[in-house]
Length: 212
Image (tube, rainbow, N blue to C red; front, side, top):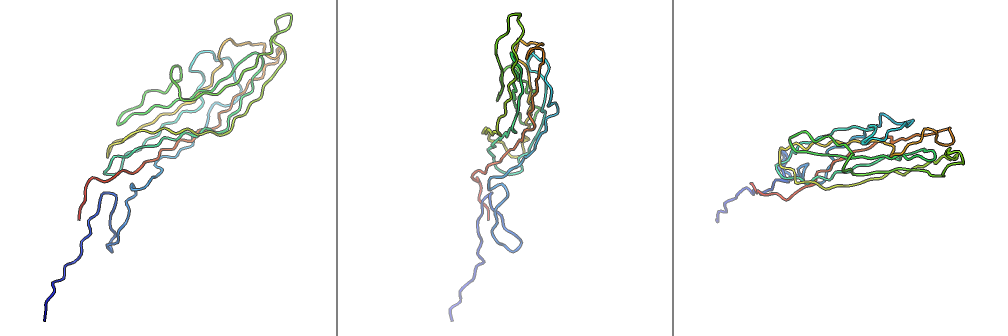
């Protein structure tokens, strides 16, 4: 009678795979796109606007987030900033503008994201209806609303075990010149950024080792 030696099968797997206690093949958490940061930062200074003609202006939103790469592989990051619906009320002849900026660093503190120079986004409103014969601004008020917007930025790759730090800020300022007797001495100025939602997505990469 012929004797056939039986060998237990052994499956080789990569770094994006694993097995459970029963030996069934499973995906590692980092093998698929995943949201690793999801924070909604509320504006702390919404409301009435006064003359703020020096950049960066009045700070409305200030938020820090971070994530450490918990996988054995490099991960590309998708930074997503979702800006809430924003509103501005401005009187003739003035202007109001939002500016935001974010900075990031690995295993270090990011630089302060001031918007005096470079910035990531801006939105504003202004009204110019001239003035009367005695140099008073003519009456006029502009109400503006903008829808929710989103912007994506790719960054990476982030090395295994490295810590990604991000710092987001949103400001409001009043580009000069500024008139204190706007809207014929009945000034009405208001700005509301509401909130900003900050997401970071970690994207999978191909494994480099096979074991088993």
